[in-house]
Length: 604
Image 1 (cartoon, rainbow, N blue to C red):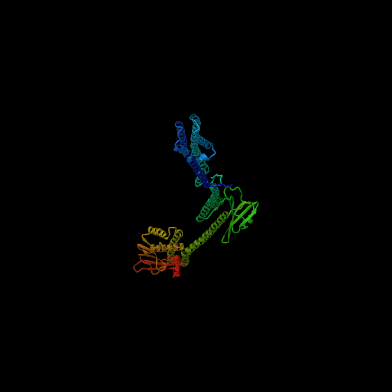
Image 2 (cartoon, rainbow, N blue to C red):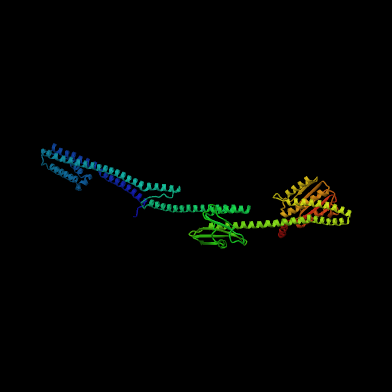
């Protein structure tokens, strides 16, 4: 049903107020306008009594004389006054009464003018005539009073009508405007506070009804959108939490893999963490050897309700490759651990056949599989590096033994052969010479053995070459009277481990030679980087200097230094200094300076 608008209703109410006011004013004006002549009519009617008395009194006092003409004219003019025009033509009782009184007045005056009425008859006729005039005056007075009462009644009715209309308008405004506006305002405030369940009930189809309907629809839409937004926020929050858990798990896993090679307990912790991060209960990690067909290690989450798949054909499972299959009403996901064409095992996740893993779960399982494959690959490479290091270490030991003890023993074997021949010939001179050579050879061999033991125990740890040099020189200072000074200028030059070991051994051998043969008081060791992408080493003492026949002086020590210099790709020079003492000079190009030189050449 079509409803008038609020503006139209307010306009109608104002129009009714104005119309009532205008009608009241017009009615009051009309009645007051008619009542404006009532006083004059009463006055004129009252003057008719006086004029009639005068006219009649003149006849009673002097019947023989005629009444003055002005008396008659005045009386007739009064009867014909315009104020009585409405009574001359109307059909009301007052008009009839007025015309009857005028007719009585005419008849009485005509008889008086004719002189056919006596004084006694005049008195008798004059009394009812005067009574009739009095009635006419009273009627006029009553009519005037009735008009005044009508004006009062109109005003009272207008007052009450105005009050009633104003009360109705006030009630209508309160029920149809004020209360809906308050309800709309309260609802708007509740919406502003986040309460999207608030609704406005307004049955009419006016402007406020349209506004209420629109606000309800808008509130429904906002509530729906807000609900969806909260749902999406919850979903995103859960996704972020899952991502955070997943990233934290992957980070801890990668850190543990980097810090150390994983063992059984590490695999158990990884699978337990994966169960929590992926929200998958049925997980299993199977590790196999490169040539095996059954796992040597099966790991499941702690407190797992399912037993390891000992009764299932492991060969079929571990060699099936990646993918999804359905077995015994279970959906089975397999993620093989492969890296660089090496197969280490498989990670298996199971769920009900009516379910399937989410994409983020599959991505997490794949990431864990890649990390485990990387860890196992690194472990394998680490084992291989250890094997190579062991082989290299044994090679070094063999070379050191060959270059020192083996040659010393060979020399002693030759001396023993000479000794046998001298004994057979009973050559005492040769026997004494060989005996002296054997004593010196055994002493030298024993010293070399101790040097080798020290060398094998020697290491360059995380503190670097300078710390190893300082430790070595401190030991030498404690073992001899020589003073050792170190000038180390390679703080910004990174050296490879094998370069540090060889440099350290060359310095140790040179310092040992200085201790045993220099007879000096000071040894200075300098390590610095030259301007030609090379590193120079100098070891100088202030002793007696190296003899001309240096090979016999320390054949094995010099040979060891020459061998180590060749491994570093450099040249070593041992000379007698002009100012006295021995100088060992060595320079080479380390790997990092080779790379820097190649980069500089490419840039130019």
